Image (spheres, rainbow, N blue to C red):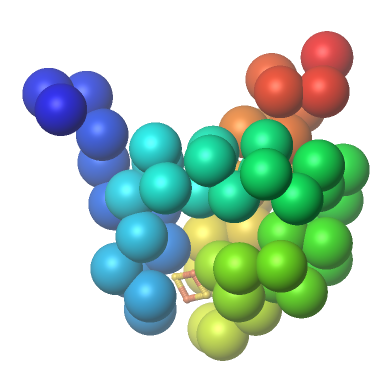
Length: 59
Ligand code: FES
């Protein structure tokens, strides 16, 4: 995919994978994403990006 940047470098997870996780687990918060797929729960530096994705997804 052309526009599928790696969001979580700790887990090497790109945007599409995280989005899939958000949808599969119906995540509403960064904490829920971390519990479900661990993205954002390792170093925490990607939480702003994940929050942005959650905002778009749950808008
Ligand atoms: S980059 Fe996502 S937890 Fe470290």
